[in-house]
Amino acid sequence: MSKISYIRHTMILEFGAKNFFSFKEGFEVLFQKSKNSTDDISNIIALKGANASGKTNVLKVLSFLQSFVTDSFSNLKPDEEIKISSYFFNELPIEVYIIFLNNGIEYKYEIILTNKKVINEKIYRTKKRETLIIERSEHKVTTIEEYSELETININRKNASIISIAKQYAIKEIDIIFNLFNFITNVDELGKLDNRDRFLDYNTVSKIYYGNKELLNFVIEFLKKADSGISNIYIEKRKEAENGNTIYFPLFDYNLEKGNHYLTYFEQSSGIQTLYLQLHLYLTVIGTGSVLALDEFDINLHPDLLPMLLDFFENKTTNAKNAQLILTTHNYDIMDRLGKYKTILVNKEKSESFLYRLDEIPGDIIRNNRPISPIYNANKIGGKPRIKI
Image (cartoon, rainbow, N blue to C red):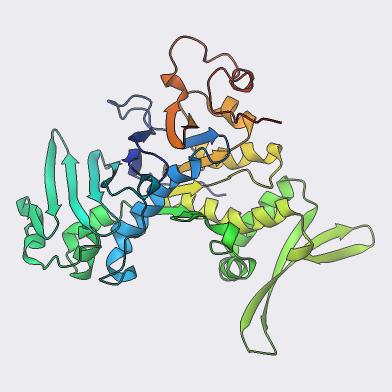
């Protein structure tokens, strides 16, 4: 990957929610080492915990915010329910928030809603002090002078964000806030997308590689370094005889002693298939300085490959735009690599999820010079399944 010559100026500082899916009480995910400082913002956060502990629901915050804040006006019909769930479908309001740092200025977005309507929406901006710049209470909007045009539009969509409504009215002042919500994730309100073949499929991804040789070369070079035996990938564009649809068909080239041999996508291992489908996301996010949220980041992948993927975000040369990765994993080594400030454990008690970052654990059980995985495996810090055989 070539060195990127300029810096991204937007990063997530923290986000959280209350009465959100399996989380009854409030939770927060901090990318900052210290809540009151923006000097040390993580590029990676890992979520670890037992199956069904609530890890995926944490990622749903980002999925919800991106789809609702940017696209709710166009994606939802006026009488359609908002795609969000409270804790066991109770009738209390749901609360969600996120804080960004953009060019040295903090923006905080807060929303209180049910699956029927938005109750309250607030946007704060902090330069030297925090200022409420936009507030929407159901159909009423109040703003500072800079955003006063928002007070003139008709807020008649109870299931749409004020930001998505403002985009429909082409109010340019909202663009800087709209553009903050630049996430790529394999999760929606129902869970992990690629379990239902709705996130990535080999034909769609092959079409992307067919039209972008830089992405394709990036994948080829990564697979070479991963000791896959693959020397090249060729993508053929074909018309299906029965229906005339265009398909993109990848062929994987292996150099053998008796010449080249080609295998199809379906003849690859599950690990190679996963890398082929996902690697373009890494280069896209690194190139744009955005956020990648991956559920089951390590699924089908050999543990030795994971440091190579993490390095895209940890390496300041390749990640000059400060792209961020938040992932869920069952891998122990990732915990040891990232350490206590970048690892969050998710637990569940009596069907209610809660989480904590490892540096929040009292005492000195977690030390910078001590591997975390042995302590975790001894069930001294939580996050392990209680399996009864």
